[in-house]
Amino acid sequence: MHSHTLAAALGGALLLGSLGAAAAPDAAALRLELDRSNALVAAQVARAAYPEYFRRAYARYPNLPAGALEAIAYSETNWVHVRPEAQNPRDLHMPRSYGVMGLYHGGGFADMVGDGARLIGRSAQQVIDDPESNILAAAALLDRALAAGQPDKRSRALAQPEAMAAVLARYAGYGASNGGIADYARQSFAYGVMQTLQQGVDAQGVKIPAQPLELERAFDAGQLQKLRAPALLMNAADDSVRANPALSRELARSAAPATDVGAKAVDFGEAIWNPASSSNYSTASNQTSAVIMHTMEGSYAGSISWFQNPSAQVSAHYLIRKSDGQITQMVREYHQAWHAKNHNYYTIGIEHDGRAADAGNWSAAMVNASARLTKSICARRGVNCASAWKGPGYDTFHLVPDSVRVKGHGMLSGNENRYDPGKYFPWSNYYNLINGGGGNPNPPGKYWVDTFANATGYKWPSTLTPVGTLNQGTNYVYCKAWGEEVRVGNSYNHYWLKTDLDVGPAGAWVSAYYLSRWGNDEARDNSGAVIPDC
Image (cartoon, rainbow, N blue to C red; front, side, top):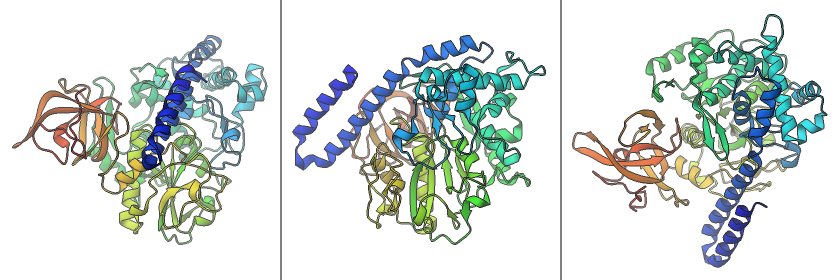
């Protein structure tokens, strides 16, 4: 065990032991936070070796664009060396993927592990077990995809970085199927990787420098409308993210008749409609009296492709992307998706990007989008959101009462081989989000606040460069600072709150003007406590 992790574990054990039986709920929350912190530290220790492995891969395949391998690893696994058998041997959400790069090994998708192993002269087991071999195998596969787009079939550097979109689509590993819907999944994979490169990452030991990519040159206008939905305009030049109502209206009326990808979702208007194969769900009536949380045990784009594969025999009603909270609907709510065995006839299934065992999986964007969706289902379908599970989460199967109508896959009878969405899913926060806010205990360093409208996020309190949006609802903030006045009529506030945006970067600033409960130049959390200065 790493020395910092050991120290944290010993300190946590002493603290928890001193709390006593009367403080059991707080002890459980602290224990979960300790487990999560230790898991993140362990992940960072493992990631420390990966930059050198990436460097060696680029040295062997020098025509690969800088950052491409790191961005693929981030999009597919969050830089976690995944070993699916050790986590859940019978997980059938989608074909298993392996290693830092999330390489498929058959099972309905391409055999990237086997093909990559042959290209680098190592065994398939080495590619599965050894992070360096896994990264090198992915580099060889990406180089092959790069060469396939060249007239003479020899690997050469790209003339412009935006041309990487077509290379990534060839690399994706979703099998041989082609056509509009299948192509959309590959485009979604390419978009996720290139969006990571455009924005950059510096968090939890993952460092990917931002690149000035113009995604408008990488995808045609129609593709980009669908890939960016819900309608946002992102401008790398001025680091802004802003809503585009005209694009939103265009999305609503621009369904492609041949593929039905990109039509306005028929049940939840924020989503895009991208149907699963009719072989993967039942048109029988759904009683829609419960909502079940899943993790994909893979990626958003991969799950879209798998649910469209007629041999998959699995589906869910909704999928949510981790990076920005995009929601795809694949089965109508009144039909039965195949996601929960003998519980399909009355449940709505929501799949979340990523893996249950990853402590760093639950982005604010994904959790908030999921909560908006679940809250809408409760309102439209009569599901009792107030009965939702409040926590804790589990890393093993854990049956909960049938009276709990919003819960995890691993809490359902007959699903004993599952535990998703896992112990790191933020159940307490989620309960608050779907039930109108209020009453959240503050986790360490965070303060819960209600906002009455979507708030624009900025880089700094004094330089008003927009970088994204904090959605209306219950959110957490870290601290406050004095800055530019925001005023509408007689209402104003000079305080600014540091937070992680729903759309946009972490550590941005929103005006305390948007707080629901407090007056001019006040910045308090939902319990009335003054938010501390930064």
